[in-house]
Image 1 (cartoon, rainbow, N blue to C red):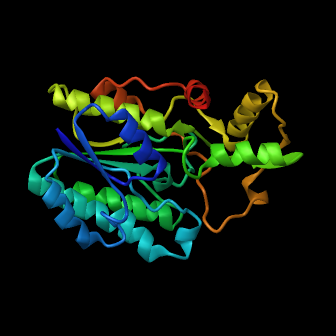
Image 2 (image 1 turned 30 degrees about the horizontal axis):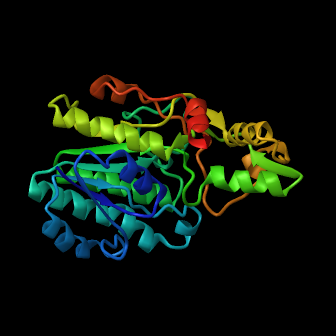
Length: 286
């Protein structure tokens, strides 16, 4: 099987390269070969490769920057997924695409299901929602996997930022009224592998949109506390953590207060077991 992974240097793409290595011939194309900022230029490389499966791990993820750069955000997160879906349908192969909790406004008091109406608060969430809608409109076989709070030991993310700041400072203020599920890129990648294996074995569930995060939830403050506990266990310095409301940490883009996603539909349809966020964090840090 020939698998095209769109993206190369991002944390999800890197995790996919490790997780999918022996599933077939995995070809990861980065920006120099597959530039999602120019959607129509994606067609020729995809046609030349003629993959059996496309996994789109590339995205515009600079949430605050997107507020002043809507054009590249929509080109990468909306138009390019549409082109990839069209090319996948033309080849008669599935497309796996990752989306985000930011398609919701966070006002719901309980975890979001796939049946809840999206209502993004900013450009980033709007561009990701437009990508979902574009893929669904094409109508080919696809999985849109919404996730949240992705981290790994690669790239730029909350885990690496906290590890650094907790050791550099004496005190650190972290938002405690936004809740969600920190999700390791390795969890996304291993879950994606399982979904591909189910499909290969003829055990696929229904195609469509699903939620895929680690289980359980915490706040950004709770996530930072868990990171700090690991530093302390290693005998490393760790700043005092102070919880603050989102109003004390203004950003260009508004964030949803509730980012919890109900993942039960994916578990039922595709027989997928997901790890608890704390267990996954420990495994990542090991």
